[in-house]
Image (cartoon, rainbow, N blue to C red; front, side):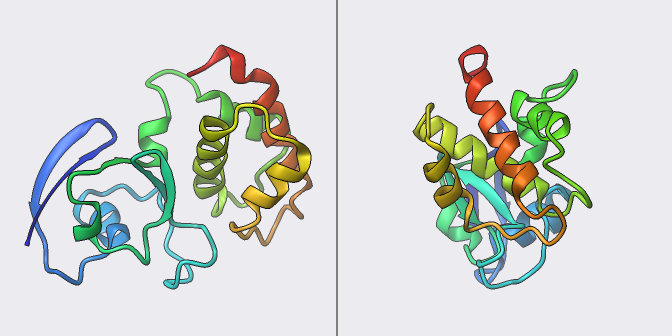
Amino acid sequence: MNVTLTVNGETLSLDVPPSTTLLDLLRDRLGLHGTKEYCHSGVCGACTVLANGRAVSSCSMLAGQVDGADVLTIEGLTPDEGLHPIQQAFVDNFGLQCGYCTPGMILLAKALLDENPSPTREEIIRYMGGNICRCTGYAGILRSVEAAVKERRSWS
């Protein structure tokens, strides 16, 4: 089947088997390895990307479901120079350790802040709760998102 989508600003038209997941398309066909593969059932959040601005689990979404969509991965979020403010907040506030969950966490935080520029601590906890981290204990992640909220005014 033919799938046309925009990935990180580049419009692509690809022939893929109907069973191809968005995760497989991103990692195997496009070489975008920032999107992580872990649970294969859409519950851990490691494979989170944004499709039309909405956080989705790319491991449980078929490529055909994003036909015509605008997909953003961690590679597309990172500017040519330096880091996106959310990425910098994660570095500055110890929101990462091994880094495996970090791309999904950062994209989920971006979706949250795009939807709600001034979330409360409880809203952040609830929104970020779908992404699992096995290393940080979440305190650093929470501090990182809270710091990004404070800096939100300076980025788009």
